[in-house]
Image (tube, rainbow, N blue to C red; front, side, top):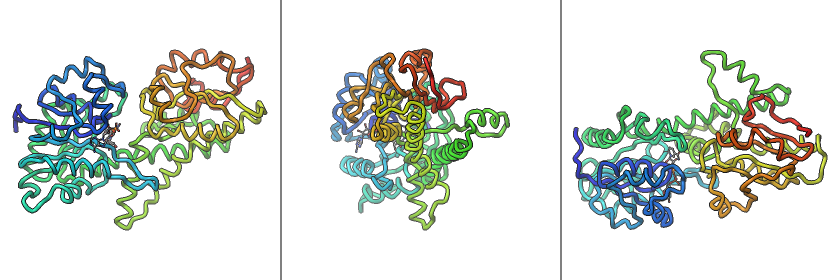
Length: 425
Ligand SMILES: NC(=O)c1ccc[n+]([C@@H]2O[C@H](COP(=O)([O-])OP(=O)(O)OC[C@H]3O[C@@H](n4cnc5c(N)ncnc54)[C@H](O)[C@@H]3O)[C@@H](O)[C@H]2O)c1
């Protein structure tokens, strides 16, 4: 099925997921990037992406895009694509409030024959339930007056290889007709394969299990690291040896932060519980991963006390983003590590040239620094394996430490399979 060139697309939520999608559609069709965050819209109108994923030139290429925070601009839209956040509440249960707001807004302006496609990560059942709850009216029926679909987003911010056009796109829809239309919509911007699922619920489940699988695998390696550490066996040496087997999975210990892998398993856990199943791997894996930051902090403090025995320590934390080579520090577990250290006689100084310091300072009352001091630190914790550290910071690490200091190379960034060790200058 060929797509009509005159269609109008609206992407609701212009964040890490929404902006790349809106820009891709904006190269082909009249597209609106809609967001409730006025500052974000002002920036995007002036072609500035504060997430540092797109340059001014990239944004300019989307010739048919307009950015707006006025929902009335979306009257007449054919395809609404929702990419708003799906976080968890304080008790780790799913928060669907942004999705609900989006559906309520769409209800006010939706015209007959249009499509609502969800890209936010959810548990199976959410897309259909929200449509039936918020869009359905007596005279407005699913698969008659409007259609729905779900297409999970798989982009990996900061990854310049697996970009939106090159990742196999899973799509699903409320009926055969809608599936054909939604498939041809995505085919117009994606050169990779489009994989269709029989139902919306299958596509929803596929996304949530992808991230749950990663979380569980990292938890397993984190647990193995806890065991090996008690026995003074180096995890990186063990992984190097085990990785020589063809089917050993290459996972490394990690602080699982961000808003996907550390969040999505809670969605699956929630719907399992709703179906009277209490998870025996998924929830405990989350608990292991959530506990790691404090365990690392305790280890570091005990090593500092054993080797340096001071009342106060100056600590340099290298990295604040939730993973390597990105600027995103939302739900970074390094925050937990820092909080624990600060409560236990450590002054922490955080260096991360990938993040926007102004933004970080607005949110966290922490000591973010532009450049580490020389001869100043009792301990250096390498928390993130940024490529930029390899060039600028790691080769001269010794200059930042005092005459005696401790390095905690959590991610084996120095590539010498030492984890915690003392340097004497
Ligand atoms: N970031 C990723 O790597 C990634 C990858 C795959 C899937 N996802 C999923 O995609 C979804 C979006 O994630 P993200 O990282 O892009 O989030 P984000 O926070 O970067 O962007 C979401 C945007 O939505 C806006 N917003 C919130 N409520 C809104 C509303 N009612 N109307 C309009 N705009 C609204 C926010 O202001 C924000 O700009 C989540 O479900 C996430 O789990 C994220």
